[in-house]
Length: 251
Ligand code: UDP
Image (cartoon, rainbow, N blue to C red; front, side, top):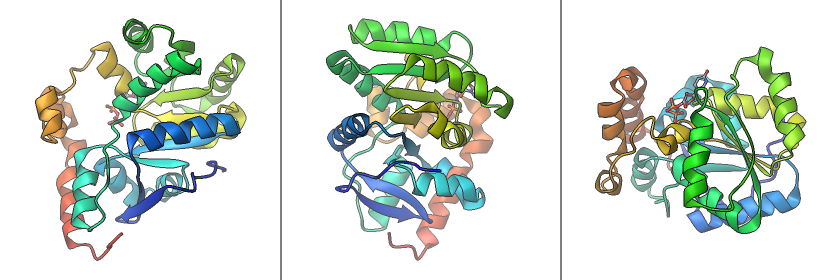
């Protein structure tokens, strides 16, 4: 598996053995432009505490994150951990914000975006919303598909045929990141990014936390209130905080 070269200027820290890159939004966009110019496939992951905890037992997932082209800090938990470890991250890069920034970049540069995943029609609805916000955004295609291995070949063919520069995969973690890792070489798409529930937020299927809550780092609380079925998965958060507090891992 080749995740593409990591940009040379990027500094990283390790939280419980999982890589997180200390990057600003501007650096991320500049790196993505480099990846597109390079043309080889690059995998980008957006790491939050649930990823870090899943990667403790899923060794392959940890390998995917640690060898990715960019491991972006998504969520206040990893930002807090970086401060605790004495290596404060310069920015937080939520997946949904990255999708929007790339939609704007696409309108500007003509990069073609492919939206894979979420429930049927959600990707199309998200595209419709973004087309209004970013007129000129170039869409290569959309497809709900499925992360099941039996469907890989057909979906890869469908994406390849449209020759996008950027592929968003919204199957949730870690399924989306495994999907990209095993299909990346056949896809021949320069930038592949796992974006979790981003299409749901943009399409309005799930409300995004209000700005003041995001500002206070309370997106996780909003998620717990609006999607209470996630509580079991979200137990990863206190486990993450506990392990970081007691870890000797100093980046
Ligand atoms: N999803 C999908 N196919 C599946 C399982 C999930 O398309 O078999 C989509 C789901 O509709 C949602 C996204 O994957 O849009 C997962 O969102 P979630 O918020 O759980 O992801 P996270 O950001 O927590 O990784």
